[in-house]
Amino acid sequence: MKKIKLCRCAALLTGICLLLTACGGPGMEEDTSPSESAAGNTLSGQAGEMGGTSPVSSDGSLAPSAAGGDSQSVSGAGNQQGGAQGNNTSGNSTAGVSAERLLNSANLKPMRTNCTALDRKVDQIFAQILNSGMSTYQKVKACFDYLVKNGIYSYDHKVEDPTQGILYNSSLDANIVQLAYGMLTTNRGVCDDYSAAFLVMTRAIGLESYLVTGQVRSTSGGYTGHTWVNIRLSGTYYIFDPQVQQDNAGAPYSYFCKTDAQMGDTYRYNDRAGMIAQFNGFRHSTEISATITVRSGGKTYQASLSQSNAANGGAVFPEGVSVGGDGTFSIDIAPSGGDGRYLCQIGYFWKPGYYAEKTISGRESFTIRADRGTNTIQVAVQSSSADLSQNAVIFEFPVTYMG
Image (tube, rainbow, N blue to C red; front, side, top):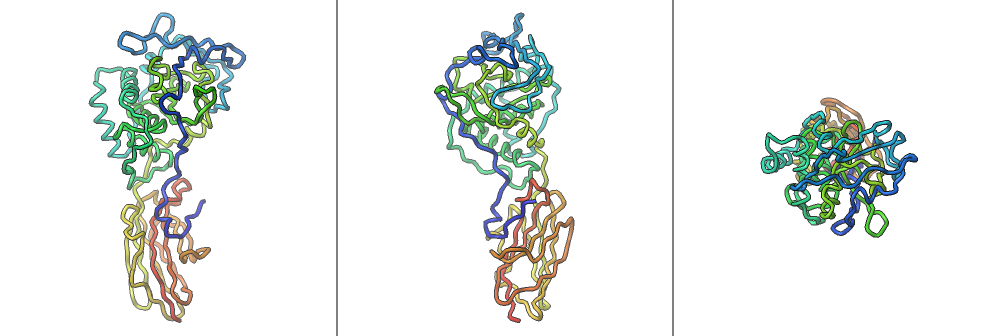
Protein backbone atom coordinates (compact mmCIF):
# COMPACT_ATOMS: atom_id res chain seq x y z
CA MET A 1 0.00 0.00 0.00
CA LYS A 2 1.14 3.47 -0.79
CA LYS A 3 1.84 5.28 2.47
CA ILE A 4 0.94 8.86 3.06
CA LYS A 5 3.86 11.24 3.44
CA LEU A 6 3.68 12.98 6.79
CA CYS A 7 3.99 16.59 5.76
CA ARG A 8 1.83 19.68 5.74
CA CYS A 9 0.76 19.32 2.10
CA ALA A 10 -0.55 15.81 2.68
CA ALA A 11 -3.83 17.21 3.94
CA LEU A 12 -4.45 18.62 0.48
CA LEU A 13 -4.04 15.33 -1.40
CA THR A 14 -6.96 14.17 -3.52
CA GLY A 15 -7.76 11.04 -5.52
CA ILE A 16 -5.67 9.92 -8.46
CA CYS A 17 -6.49 12.18 -11.39
CA LEU A 18 -8.20 10.90 -14.46
CA LEU A 19 -5.95 10.91 -17.50
CA LEU A 20 -7.06 14.17 -19.06
CA THR A 21 -6.15 13.94 -22.70
CA ALA A 22 -5.51 16.86 -25.01
CA CYS A 23 -8.63 16.44 -27.08
CA GLY A 24 -9.24 18.33 -30.25
CA GLY A 25 -11.51 21.32 -30.24
CA PRO A 26 -13.61 22.88 -32.96
CA GLY A 27 -12.22 22.22 -36.41
CA MET A 28 -10.23 19.23 -35.24
CA GLU A 29 -12.12 16.73 -37.36
CA GLU A 30 -13.46 17.27 -40.85
CA ASP A 31 -16.91 16.12 -41.89
CA THR A 32 -16.23 12.39 -41.70
CA SER A 33 -19.06 9.90 -41.97
CA PRO A 34 -18.76 6.17 -41.15
CA SER A 35 -18.77 5.39 -44.88
CA GLU A 36 -15.64 7.49 -45.31
CA SER A 37 -13.79 6.17 -42.30
CA ALA A 38 -14.71 2.55 -42.91
CA ALA A 39 -13.94 2.56 -46.60
CA GLY A 40 -11.30 -0.01 -47.36
CA ASN A 41 -10.94 -0.90 -43.69
CA THR A 42 -10.05 -4.51 -43.12
CA LEU A 43 -11.01 -6.25 -39.89
CA SER A 44 -9.65 -9.77 -39.51
CA GLY A 45 -9.29 -10.20 -43.23
CA GLN A 46 -12.77 -8.97 -44.11
CA ALA A 47 -13.36 -5.75 -45.97
CA GLY A 48 -15.22 -3.04 -44.12
CA GLU A 49 -18.82 -3.32 -45.28
CA MET A 50 -20.38 -1.18 -42.61
CA GLY A 51 -22.43 0.99 -44.91
CA GLY A 52 -22.66 4.77 -44.82
CA THR A 53 -24.19 7.20 -42.41
CA SER A 54 -27.50 5.89 -41.12
CA PRO A 55 -30.59 7.29 -42.83
CA VAL A 56 -31.66 10.62 -41.34
CA SER A 57 -35.33 11.47 -40.92
CA SER A 58 -36.89 14.86 -41.47
CA ASP A 59 -36.33 15.80 -37.82
CA GLY A 60 -32.65 14.95 -38.05
CA SER A 61 -32.89 11.71 -36.05
CA LEU A 62 -31.58 8.32 -37.00
CA ALA A 63 -34.26 6.41 -38.82
CA PRO A 64 -34.35 2.59 -39.16
CA SER A 65 -34.85 1.36 -42.70
CA ALA A 66 -35.58 -1.83 -44.51
CA ALA A 67 -31.96 -1.90 -45.54
CA GLY A 68 -30.89 -2.19 -41.93
CA GLY A 69 -30.31 1.39 -40.83
CA ASP A 70 -27.12 1.12 -38.79
CA SER A 71 -25.96 -2.00 -40.63
CA GLN A 72 -23.23 -3.66 -38.58
CA SER A 73 -21.17 -6.73 -39.28
CA VAL A 74 -18.26 -7.60 -37.00
CA SER A 75 -15.91 -10.53 -37.49
CA GLY A 76 -14.91 -12.87 -34.72
CA ALA A 77 -11.35 -11.67 -34.37
CA GLY A 78 -12.10 -8.52 -32.37
CA ASN A 79 -10.81 -4.99 -32.82
CA GLN A 80 -7.34 -4.39 -34.24
CA GLN A 81 -7.32 -0.60 -34.06
CA GLY A 82 -4.40 0.80 -32.13
CA GLY A 83 -4.30 -2.10 -29.67
CA ALA A 84 -7.92 -1.68 -28.58
CA GLN A 85 -8.82 -3.93 -25.68
CA GLY A 86 -11.99 -5.29 -24.15
CA ASN A 87 -14.19 -5.37 -27.25
CA ASN A 88 -16.85 -8.01 -26.83
CA THR A 89 -17.80 -8.25 -30.50
CA SER A 90 -16.04 -11.56 -31.00
CA GLY A 91 -18.29 -13.97 -32.86
CA ASN A 92 -21.21 -11.57 -32.55
CA SER A 93 -23.15 -10.32 -35.59
CA THR A 94 -25.47 -7.33 -35.29
CA ALA A 95 -26.09 -6.86 -39.00
CA GLY A 96 -29.39 -5.16 -39.76
CA VAL A 97 -29.96 -3.89 -36.20
CA SER A 98 -30.62 -0.17 -35.99
CA ALA A 99 -29.48 2.10 -33.19
CA GLU A 100 -33.13 2.48 -32.25
CA ARG A 101 -33.68 -1.25 -31.86
CA LEU A 102 -30.41 -1.70 -29.96
CA LEU A 103 -31.14 1.02 -27.42
CA ASN A 104 -34.81 0.17 -27.00
CA SER A 105 -33.99 -3.47 -26.29
CA ALA A 106 -31.39 -2.64 -23.61
CA ASN A 107 -31.96 -3.93 -20.08
CA LEU A 108 -32.02 -0.73 -18.06
CA LYS A 109 -30.50 -0.37 -14.60
CA PRO A 110 -30.65 3.33 -13.64
CA MET A 111 -27.63 4.51 -11.67
CA ARG A 112 -27.19 7.72 -9.69
CA THR A 113 -23.81 9.28 -8.91
CA ASN A 114 -24.52 9.69 -5.18
CA CYS A 115 -23.44 13.32 -5.55
CA THR A 116 -26.53 15.36 -4.62
CA ALA A 117 -25.50 18.46 -6.56
CA LEU A 118 -24.87 16.54 -9.79
CA ASP A 119 -27.90 14.25 -9.52
CA ARG A 120 -30.11 17.29 -8.92
CA LYS A 121 -28.67 19.00 -12.01
CA VAL A 122 -29.29 15.91 -14.14
CA ASP A 123 -32.89 15.82 -12.90
CA GLN A 124 -33.34 19.47 -13.86
CA ILE A 125 -32.03 18.85 -17.39
CA PHE A 126 -34.12 15.69 -17.79
CA ALA A 127 -37.22 17.67 -16.82
CA GLN A 128 -36.47 19.95 -19.77
CA ILE A 129 -35.57 17.42 -22.45
CA LEU A 130 -37.31 14.12 -21.54
CA ASN A 131 -40.85 12.95 -21.00
CA SER A 132 -42.40 9.72 -19.80
CA GLY A 133 -43.59 8.74 -23.27
CA MET A 134 -40.10 8.62 -24.75
CA SER A 135 -38.37 5.37 -25.68
CA THR A 136 -34.84 4.65 -24.48
CA TYR A 137 -33.53 5.56 -27.92
CA GLN A 138 -35.31 8.90 -27.85
CA LYS A 139 -33.99 9.66 -24.37
CA VAL A 140 -30.39 8.87 -25.29
CA LYS A 141 -30.68 10.91 -28.46
CA ALA A 142 -32.10 13.83 -26.43
CA CYS A 143 -29.10 13.71 -24.08
CA PHE A 144 -26.70 13.55 -27.03
CA ASP A 145 -28.47 16.46 -28.73
CA TYR A 146 -28.43 18.50 -25.54
CA LEU A 147 -24.64 18.36 -25.31
CA VAL A 148 -24.08 18.89 -29.03
CA LYS A 149 -26.40 21.90 -29.16
CA ASN A 150 -25.53 23.53 -25.83
CA GLY A 151 -21.90 22.63 -25.24
CA ILE A 152 -19.18 25.24 -25.72
CA TYR A 153 -15.68 23.90 -26.25
CA SER A 154 -13.58 25.67 -23.63
CA TYR A 155 -10.84 25.03 -21.11
CA ASP A 156 -12.21 27.85 -18.93
CA HIS A 157 -14.92 26.12 -16.91
CA LYS A 158 -13.76 25.96 -13.31
CA VAL A 159 -16.40 25.13 -10.72
CA GLU A 160 -16.34 24.07 -7.09
CA ASP A 161 -15.67 20.39 -6.47
CA PRO A 162 -19.10 18.79 -5.83
CA THR A 163 -17.55 15.64 -4.29
CA GLN A 164 -16.48 17.24 -0.99
CA GLY A 165 -17.44 14.85 1.79
CA ILE A 166 -17.89 11.90 -0.60
CA LEU A 167 -15.23 9.19 -0.74
CA TYR A 168 -15.70 7.34 -4.01
CA ASN A 169 -14.26 3.84 -4.02
CA SER A 170 -12.75 4.59 -7.44
CA SER A 171 -10.79 7.73 -8.25
CA LEU A 172 -12.11 7.45 -11.83
CA ASP A 173 -15.69 7.71 -10.54
CA ALA A 174 -14.79 10.82 -8.53
CA ASN A 175 -13.26 12.46 -11.60
CA ILE A 176 -16.26 11.58 -13.79
CA VAL A 177 -18.52 13.30 -11.26
CA GLN A 178 -16.34 16.43 -11.16
CA LEU A 179 -16.08 16.65 -14.96
CA ALA A 180 -19.79 16.03 -15.56
CA TYR A 181 -20.80 18.58 -12.94
CA GLY A 182 -18.60 21.24 -14.53
CA MET A 183 -20.02 20.55 -17.99
CA LEU A 184 -23.67 20.44 -16.98
CA THR A 185 -23.52 23.56 -14.81
CA THR A 186 -21.51 25.76 -17.19
CA ASN A 187 -22.13 24.12 -20.62
CA ARG A 188 -18.37 24.48 -21.09
CA GLY A 189 -15.70 21.85 -21.35
CA VAL A 190 -13.45 19.72 -23.49
CA CYS A 191 -13.81 16.11 -24.61
CA ASP A 192 -13.38 14.74 -21.08
CA ASP A 193 -16.22 16.95 -19.82
CA TYR A 194 -18.62 16.25 -22.71
CA SER A 195 -18.02 12.51 -22.34
CA ALA A 196 -18.34 12.44 -18.54
CA ALA A 197 -21.62 14.36 -18.78
CA PHE A 198 -22.99 11.96 -21.41
CA LEU A 199 -21.94 8.97 -19.30
CA VAL A 200 -23.69 10.33 -16.20
CA MET A 201 -26.85 11.11 -18.17
CA THR A 202 -27.02 7.70 -19.86
CA ARG A 203 -26.19 5.90 -16.62
CA ALA A 204 -29.14 7.73 -15.05
CA ILE A 205 -31.31 6.37 -17.88
CA GLY A 206 -29.97 2.91 -17.09
CA LEU A 207 -27.43 2.07 -19.79
CA GLU A 208 -24.04 0.41 -19.32
CA SER A 209 -21.86 3.39 -20.23
CA TYR A 210 -18.10 3.75 -19.80
CA LEU A 211 -15.52 6.47 -20.26
CA VAL A 212 -12.65 5.48 -22.55
CA THR A 213 -9.50 7.28 -23.63
CA GLY A 214 -7.14 7.08 -26.57
CA GLN A 215 -6.70 9.02 -29.78
CA VAL A 216 -8.96 10.31 -32.53
CA ARG A 217 -7.92 10.96 -36.12
CA SER A 218 -7.37 14.62 -36.97
CA THR A 219 -7.69 16.50 -40.23
CA SER A 220 -3.91 16.57 -40.57
CA GLY A 221 -3.86 12.81 -40.92
CA GLY A 222 -2.37 12.23 -37.48
CA TYR A 223 -4.06 11.59 -34.16
CA THR A 224 -4.78 13.67 -31.07
CA GLY A 225 -5.50 12.57 -27.49
CA HIS A 226 -9.18 12.14 -26.81
CA THR A 227 -11.89 10.86 -24.46
CA TRP A 228 -15.24 9.43 -25.54
CA VAL A 229 -17.98 7.05 -24.36
CA ASN A 230 -18.61 3.38 -25.02
CA ILE A 231 -22.03 1.90 -24.26
CA ARG A 232 -22.34 -1.87 -24.11
CA LEU A 233 -25.38 -3.09 -26.02
CA SER A 234 -26.09 -6.76 -26.76
CA GLY A 235 -22.50 -7.64 -25.87
CA THR A 236 -20.89 -5.05 -28.15
CA TYR A 237 -19.31 -1.71 -27.28
CA TYR A 238 -20.72 1.20 -29.28
CA ILE A 239 -19.08 4.61 -29.71
CA PHE A 240 -20.91 7.78 -28.65
CA ASP A 241 -18.96 11.01 -29.01
CA PRO A 242 -20.95 14.25 -28.60
CA GLN A 243 -17.85 16.47 -28.64
CA VAL A 244 -16.55 15.29 -32.03
CA GLN A 245 -20.12 15.19 -33.34
CA GLN A 246 -20.39 18.89 -32.49
CA ASP A 247 -17.42 19.51 -34.79
CA ASN A 248 -19.14 17.62 -37.60
CA ALA A 249 -22.52 19.30 -37.97
CA GLY A 250 -22.64 18.32 -41.63
CA ALA A 251 -22.70 14.63 -40.78
CA PRO A 252 -25.51 14.23 -38.20
CA TYR A 253 -25.19 11.27 -35.80
CA SER A 254 -22.05 9.94 -37.41
CA TYR A 255 -20.66 9.55 -33.88
CA PHE A 256 -23.80 8.12 -32.30
CA CYS A 257 -24.06 4.37 -31.62
CA LYS A 258 -21.31 3.20 -33.97
CA THR A 259 -19.16 0.10 -33.71
CA ASP A 260 -15.38 0.36 -33.80
CA ALA A 261 -15.46 -1.34 -37.21
CA GLN A 262 -17.89 1.24 -38.58
CA MET A 263 -15.53 4.02 -37.55
CA GLY A 264 -12.58 2.39 -39.29
CA ASP A 265 -9.32 4.00 -38.16
CA THR A 266 -10.98 7.06 -36.61
CA TYR A 267 -10.39 5.93 -33.02
CA ARG A 268 -7.51 4.27 -31.23
CA TYR A 269 -7.93 3.07 -27.65
CA ASN A 270 -5.35 3.28 -24.90
CA ASP A 271 -6.62 0.48 -22.65
CA ARG A 272 -10.35 0.05 -22.91
CA ALA A 273 -10.49 -2.99 -20.63
CA GLY A 274 -8.40 -1.18 -18.03
CA MET A 275 -10.59 1.93 -18.08
CA ILE A 276 -13.77 -0.11 -17.83
CA ALA A 277 -12.35 -2.07 -14.89
CA GLN A 278 -11.71 1.18 -12.99
CA PHE A 279 -15.36 2.20 -13.03
CA ASN A 280 -17.02 1.17 -9.76
CA GLY A 281 -20.62 2.25 -10.14
CA PHE A 282 -20.21 5.44 -8.09
CA ARG A 283 -19.91 3.43 -4.88
CA HIS A 284 -18.71 5.57 -2.02
CA SER A 285 -18.16 5.94 1.70
CA THR A 286 -18.64 8.87 4.04
CA GLU A 287 -15.71 11.20 4.70
CA ILE A 288 -13.15 10.22 7.30
CA SER A 289 -13.15 11.99 10.65
CA ALA A 290 -11.22 11.32 13.84
CA THR A 291 -10.76 12.46 17.41
CA ILE A 292 -7.37 12.26 19.11
CA THR A 293 -6.76 12.45 22.85
CA VAL A 294 -3.21 13.13 24.02
CA ARG A 295 -2.28 12.44 27.64
CA SER A 296 0.98 13.64 29.17
CA GLY A 297 2.12 14.59 32.66
CA GLY A 298 -1.36 14.58 34.12
CA LYS A 299 -2.73 16.80 31.32
CA THR A 300 -5.22 15.85 28.63
CA TYR A 301 -5.48 17.44 25.17
CA GLN A 302 -8.28 16.61 22.73
CA ALA A 303 -9.09 17.61 19.12
CA SER A 304 -11.45 16.44 16.36
CA LEU A 305 -11.08 16.88 12.59
CA SER A 306 -12.78 15.72 9.41
CA GLN A 307 -11.62 15.88 5.81
CA SER A 308 -13.88 18.84 5.06
CA ASN A 309 -13.15 20.61 8.34
CA ALA A 310 -9.40 20.69 8.83
CA ALA A 311 -8.88 24.34 9.78
CA ASN A 312 -5.32 25.67 9.72
CA GLY A 313 -4.14 22.66 7.78
CA GLY A 314 -4.90 20.29 10.65
CA ALA A 315 -2.91 22.23 13.26
CA VAL A 316 -4.21 21.60 16.81
CA PHE A 317 -3.04 22.37 20.36
CA PRO A 318 -1.44 25.75 19.47
CA GLU A 319 0.23 25.95 22.90
CA GLY A 320 1.85 22.60 22.30
CA VAL A 321 2.12 19.47 24.41
CA SER A 322 4.64 19.31 27.27
CA VAL A 323 6.24 15.99 28.08
CA GLY A 324 8.23 15.11 31.19
CA GLY A 325 9.63 12.03 32.93
CA ASP A 326 11.11 9.54 30.52
CA GLY A 327 9.52 11.29 27.54
CA THR A 328 6.57 8.95 27.06
CA PHE A 329 3.04 10.11 26.34
CA SER A 330 -0.07 8.47 24.87
CA ILE A 331 -2.27 9.21 21.87
CA ASP A 332 -5.76 7.72 21.64
CA ILE A 333 -7.29 7.68 18.13
CA ALA A 334 -11.03 7.29 17.53
CA PRO A 335 -11.77 7.20 13.75
CA SER A 336 -15.09 7.11 11.88
CA GLY A 337 -16.42 7.23 8.32
CA GLY A 338 -14.52 5.95 5.30
CA ASP A 339 -14.66 2.22 4.67
CA GLY A 340 -14.41 1.27 8.35
CA ARG A 341 -10.72 0.34 8.32
CA TYR A 342 -7.97 2.89 8.86
CA LEU A 343 -4.22 3.06 8.56
CA CYS A 344 -2.87 5.18 11.43
CA GLN A 345 0.60 6.68 11.18
CA ILE A 346 2.30 8.80 13.85
CA GLY A 347 5.59 10.52 13.13
CA TYR A 348 7.65 13.69 13.43
CA PHE A 349 7.34 16.40 10.81
CA TRP A 350 9.82 15.84 7.92
CA LYS A 351 11.60 13.01 9.74
CA PRO A 352 11.73 9.59 8.08
CA GLY A 353 9.90 6.61 9.51
CA TYR A 354 7.01 6.38 11.94
CA TYR A 355 6.87 6.08 15.69
CA ALA A 356 3.70 4.09 15.28
CA GLU A 357 1.89 2.57 12.31
CA LYS A 358 -1.09 0.25 12.52
CA THR A 359 -4.30 -0.63 10.71
CA ILE A 360 -7.31 -0.36 13.01
CA SER A 361 -11.10 -0.59 12.79
CA GLY A 362 -11.97 1.36 15.95
CA ARG A 363 -10.50 3.22 18.91
CA GLU A 364 -6.82 2.49 19.57
CA SER A 365 -4.20 3.81 22.01
CA PHE A 366 -0.52 4.36 21.12
CA THR A 367 2.41 5.03 23.46
CA ILE A 368 5.08 7.36 22.04
CA ARG A 369 8.48 8.36 23.46
CA ALA A 370 9.42 11.94 22.59
CA ASP A 371 12.82 13.13 21.41
CA ARG A 372 14.53 15.91 23.35
CA GLY A 373 13.62 19.48 22.42
CA THR A 374 10.57 20.63 20.48
CA ASN A 375 9.36 18.64 17.51
CA THR A 376 6.24 18.82 15.37
CA ILE A 377 4.32 15.58 15.37
CA GLN A 378 1.69 14.46 12.90
CA VAL A 379 -1.06 11.89 13.30
CA ALA A 380 -2.50 10.63 9.99
CA VAL A 381 -5.72 8.61 9.84
CA GLN A 382 -6.46 7.34 6.34
CA SER A 383 -8.51 4.71 4.58
CA SER A 384 -6.77 1.34 4.49
CA SER A 385 -8.12 0.66 0.99
CA ALA A 386 -5.33 0.86 -1.59
CA ASP A 387 -7.46 2.92 -3.97
CA LEU A 388 -8.38 5.37 -1.20
CA SER A 389 -4.92 5.68 0.35
CA GLN A 390 -4.89 9.44 -0.03
CA ASN A 391 -8.19 10.07 1.76
CA ALA A 392 -7.04 11.11 5.22
CA VAL A 393 -7.27 13.52 8.10
CA ILE A 394 -3.98 14.74 9.56
CA PHE A 395 -3.42 16.30 12.97
CA GLU A 396 -0.31 18.39 13.57
CA PHE A 397 1.00 19.78 16.88
CA PRO A 398 4.30 20.61 18.65
CA VAL A 399 5.65 18.35 21.41
CA THR A 400 8.30 19.66 23.84
CA TYR A 401 10.38 17.29 25.99
CA MET A 402 13.00 18.80 28.31
CA GLY A 403 14.03 15.61 30.08
